[in-house]
Image 1 (cartoon, rainbow, N blue to C red):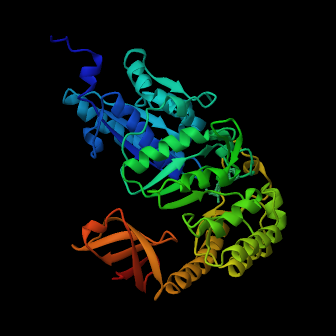
Image 2: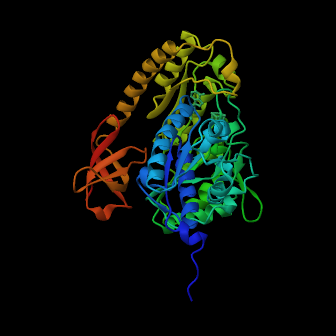
Image 3: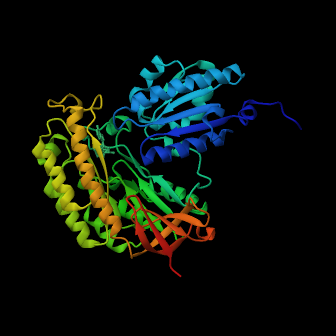
Length: 454
Ligand code: 5AD
Ligand code: SF4
């Protein structure tokens, strides 16, 4: 029996392209949106110009995010016109935190946008795109009580050896500089059974390393199948019991939620990698209070001491903001002092940028761009010294390396060390997806080279 061509058959020919900005959670979200589109009959294209549906998954955490979206939309408008001249229509979606915060305004100003979809509505993306074809521009930025994870299609295959798994979303901490509590909403933990199902699917698809994601991941408090509360420790233990899953990481943690049992787990759970991202943001207690960080510099140093006492091999990375409103030279130097004391393996540092709607944006004492730039340069020079020293200290050591992809030269693969460093080694492609012992022979600022042990 033949059936007439219906709407879903027509969609079978449609292609999509997702451009991702910002954090790892956006990378994860883009994968899930892509899967929802595939389930709706789309196929992915690697060429933006060929796409029937273009999704910009945006980031709002720091400045120029909105400018970037506008300039990309300008380019897309030209592409849309060229495609139209060739008889092809193009649908454009803005997703992510810019969509949540300012999407309606952008859509109003730029006619090229068909759908604005906030991070809590991704499961509705295929339907919204369809609806926009008949109804015109659609804005979907309501917070939907977290129906998203129940409604997104079940994961089928993994793309890589290492995968992200969002376990917690949103944040209740309200640091005064940060948009996340407004764009991602209130803190929400996914139930453990849902996470175990997703993890098993990823592992069946070849994933060997998983990074658990959350804006405030160590505040994770889900429920198990019996309805009992589970913390991040319980979740990590349950995931570590999956035999093929060899490595676990989690990010981003708030110092206030680094509980004793989680610190202890870094000493007792071999699958938990000895690398922790723990933002401290600033070294001055006055600035930390103005940031509403809920910890002092001494609290942070004490926490680091306790973590290192449990696992001396653990390395730290961090986030730092320079030029918060009112920051004096002496207060900035307290940040430098913190960096000298802790010796981070890796750090992400930013100039403070006023985010509309956050308390710090209207505080007195906003600093000039010149002051912020100068402080950032001084800080980054110090951070580079520390990370170079850390990498140099790895030479001669033997690391378990999980090989993930081909290197630049034939015969070479690139893998990850326990400390997330890229490691280059000459090894047979059969090593892809496997962990091998590698003796580190050289260190650069951003990567290591090594020799696979016999
Ligand atoms: N300005 C500069 N940096 C910021 N971050 C978050 N909001 C801002 C802002 N308004 C940084 C913080 C956070 C990281 C993800 O981005 O350091 O930890
Ligand atoms: Fe933003 Fe992190 Fe502070 Fe939450 S804890 S408000 S996500 S900086």
